[in-house]
Image 1 (cartoon, rainbow, N blue to C red):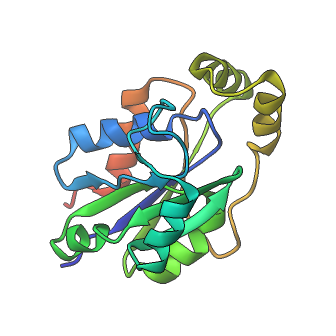
Image 2: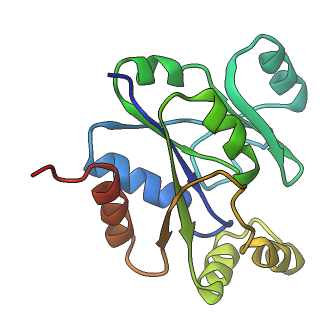
Length: 180
């Protein structure tokens, strides 16, 4: 059986990458998709492949991406290597933009979405702690935090204001329910 492509979405600072890492550590059926981003590799946060815009465009033209999109002035992509994991029956967990969900739903045969949320003050504190944005940029991200998912997207909604392990376990319980 083919694996599932599982998209994690939510506002900046909600803990998508932390939840993904915890889920993968807790369950060997999950492999993490390593994104390609037009941002310096030393920018912090998630583990990703940083490339120039020219390199990104060349990779895209060479059809090296299973999925690509733009957000916040950057280019993002999921490499084609995810297809091999899916073919092997592994579930691939990827941090996606909400704007890329419809394309992902159309691209992947088995597709699930986990939409993470958190209280506004929690998001604000997390964004400030990572030190990548100005106060004005943080305010803009907080204002976009309540953006709805596209029509036609069904998702598991989880609040990640509390303990990381609790949220990750809730996601795993939903993805892999115990069969009676």
